[in-house]
Length: 120
Ligand code: SF4
Image (cartoon, rainbow, N blue to C red; front, side, top):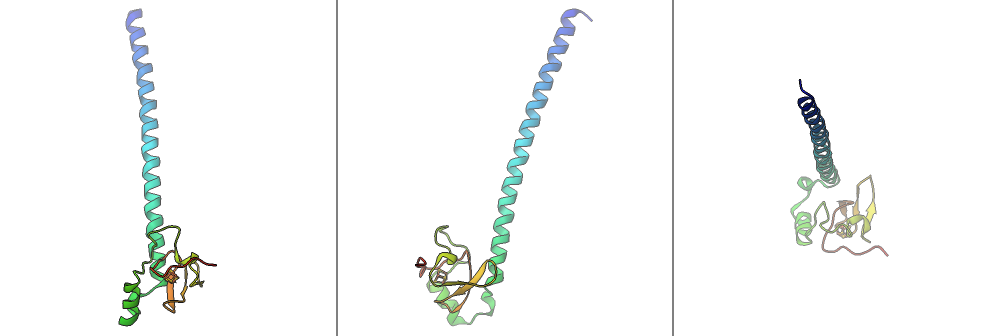
């Protein structure tokens, strides 16, 4: 093997290592993004599952369901600054759950409805 081909082989190897390191970094970053997104989805699913544990819509009579629908109640507030737990009508019960003074019934701490009013 000539000196020139040894040099090229070394350069190729060195470049190859650089590419391998670059690919490895890219793979690590991609893996980190996947873990992060997966964690966020799992967290959202857990929060929604917990909200479902607070409020059993199937057990409610039509009147209570109509009231909730009329006030656009939701188990997950569309406005992060206005969850039930920050509402003046909310009384906490178990973790993630509470009672609503308007509905006189359970609600989720992260829920929301049109009657939201800041705690004083
Ligand atoms: S009034 Fe609405 S926002 Fe306030 S605790 Fe009841 S459901 Fe939640």
